[in-house]
Amino acid sequence: MRLPSLTHLRCFESAARHQSFTAAGEELGLTQSAVSKKVKELESDLGFDLFQRVGRGVVLTPAGQGLAADLELDLAGLRATLQKAAAAGAGRSALRIAVLPAFANLWLIPRLPDFFDRHPEVELSFSTRLEPFDFARENFDLAVHYGLDNWPGTHMAPLFGEEMVPVCAPGFYAAHQLELAANLAQAPLLHLDSRAGSWAEWFERAGLAGSPRQDGRYFDQHSMVIAAAAAGLGAAIVPYDMVAREITAGDLLRIPGPVLESRKRYFLVRPHGPVPEAVQKLEVWMRKQLRTRPD
Image 1 (tube, rainbow, N blue to C red):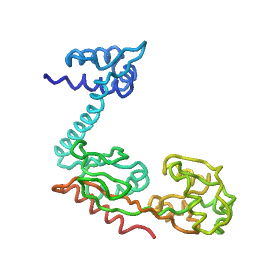
Image 2 (cartoon, helix red, strand yellow):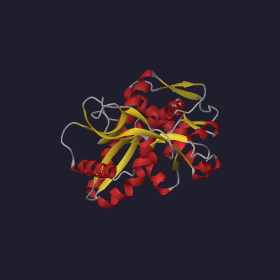
Image 3 (tube, rainbow, N blue to C red):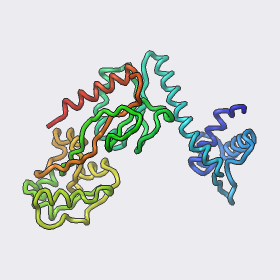
Image 4 (cartoon, helix red, strand yellow):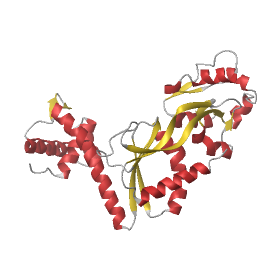
């Protein structure tokens, strides 16, 4: 089979992702009719339909669904390959890293200026992955994983466990007199949707009477919970390592009381096999960051 052009594949991938030729055209800087024409030409080359035209919209056929899923990974891998080639052409190395959004936004990215100061010869790119994947299928050099030591076929280096602590903004701390933890029973609380029972567990561990308020604000990302706490919207229970810098700087205050610990940990994960020098540099740097962890 003759390989279709990259332009045809990109038009199909974008149209499949958006389920719209118009949106694909806006993304690619083409007209709707140009995208539609490219997709029809691709269908003609392949010999089967990728979309069903339903009224004024389009729906992927089963064959189109399969191609779209594989093509998304293939194009991402191609981009990573070209990034590595561009870096090599400039005398640098490039690493592609799969990350969890909260870990990247709250722990890793704020520390990266130090890494780039020490290793200007290494370029990093990041993509979100929430679940384990096949390194042989997806073109990643490293991944950050939260959970148990159960990612088959990989080397998993533990980074840190998750210690959950209550925090709030200084003004909120003073207004609600939270030097006495019992005053949390009357204070607005912030909740993470996936861990709605954290405050109840903390109240029990702290020996506080009654149940925590359930009428607070709810969020589905730790980064949002932490931003809300910093804005003075309430008290939050969050991973200590995600807010250690803010606590040290005085932007957040730790509320007295117990620490909630989980069996799960953060891991730095890579496939088995030879370890590239750039990967070794990043791993060593991350371990150094852990050794300088604030108390």
